[in-house]
Length: 493
Ligand code: BG6
Image (cartoon, rainbow, N blue to C red; front, side):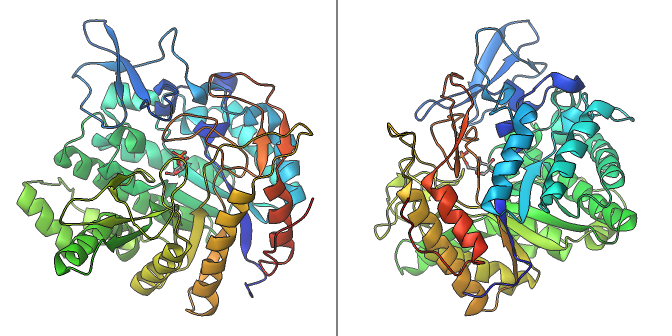
C-alpha cells in the first residue's frame, strides 16, 4: 500500500456523544440533551412538555410529529447520556495524549453550537465556550494533530427548536452563519478542515436529529434541508473569504446499495435508493437541484420556498471536498426480503455477508464501490470520516481487551480503501474511524456499543470510573499509522 505522506490518519467523535459538561461553562441545551438513553431494543425518546403542561416522550425512531405548541426539555427521572458523555470536557488532555500515542495525524470533533451560543440566536458568543475549544485545539497542535471540525453534528441549540421550530425556520440560516463567522475568525490558523453538517441526508430520515425539526413530512424535510443547503453555501463562501486556506466539506451518511437480484426492477430500486444520498451531495457539490429530485417533489406536491439569490448562492458555495460515513451496505428488492439495520438506513439482508451484533452488515468491498461512485460523480477529494464496528468488549481479568473482531473489520476496510486509491485512482484525503475512544451510541444511546481503540469504563446507566485503557486495536492502529497503512498484520501482545 502506498498512501500520500500527508494522508490524514486519525479518529472521529461528536461533542454530544463524548463531551459531557452539558451545562458547564455557560453551555445551553441542545437537541441531544433531551434524548434519553434507549437500549438495543428500546428506541431512544425525545422528552417534551405539551402546551397543556403534560410531560411526554416519544421515540426518535420511527419519528412522528411532536404536538404543536410543545416544548422539548429535560425531565426529572430520565437518564440522558449526552449530559456526561465520557466527560471529554474534563479529560481532553489525557485523551489527546492517547491519540498522539497512537500517532494520529488528525482528530475529528464537533463544536457544540450551544456551548458558544447557548440560545442559538445571540449576536455575541460565550467566551468561556470559545476558550474551551481554544484549549482543545492548542492541545492538539502541541502534538501536531490537525483538527477536523464538524460545525453541526446532531446538536442544534434547543432554544432554536422551542422558539423557531428548528431548521424549518429560515432565520436559522443567519444564526448559523453568525456562528460560523465566530468559528472561522476565532480559530483562523488553528483549524483548516471543516464540515458544515454531519450526515446532512439524515434530514430525510430523522429530522429532529438532523436539525431540530419537529415535523416529519416531506414538505417540512425538504424546506428544512434547503435552509441547511443555503446555510452551508454561505458558510463555504465566508470561510474562504476569512481564510483562503480553509477547506470546507459536506458530510453525508453513505453506503452501498445492491439490488437483491439481477431482476431489472431490483436494479432500478437500487438506483433510486442511491439517489437518497446523492441528492444531498449533488446540491452541495454541483450547486443545483438535480432533475430527479425536482420531478420527485412535483409528484409529491412538495414546494420548496426559495428566495431570490438562493440559486446563485448554491452555485457559489460548492464544497471543497466530500466527507462521508461508511459502515455498511444493504440490498433492496421489489419482492419480500428480511429487513436489516444500518446507519439509520433501511434495506434487506444480503445473504453473502455477515452482520454485526446490531445487525449492520459488514462489507469492505462496499467501501471501495462507495469511494469510486463518489469520485467518478464529483471528481473532488474524498474523506472517510466515519467507519468502524460497534461491538461489546470484554475486559479480561488482567485488564486487557482482545478486540480482534474490530481489527478484522478495520483491516478489511483499509484494504479496500487501498484498492480504491492505488488501483482505481481515487483521491482520498484521510481516514478517521468512528468513536476512536468509546462514546455514546447515537442510534441507541448505549455505551456498550463500542467502537473505540480506547476503552472507557462507563456503562449504559452512567456507572463507571471513566478510566481510559488501551485495547488491542490501539496497538494495531498505532502500527498501521506508523507504516502509513502498509502494515496491517495482526499483532501479538
Ligand atoms: C453516524 C453518526 O450515523 O453513525 C454518529 O454520524 C454515530 O454520530 C455513528 O454515532 C454510529 O452510529 P451508532 O448508532 O452506532 O452510534
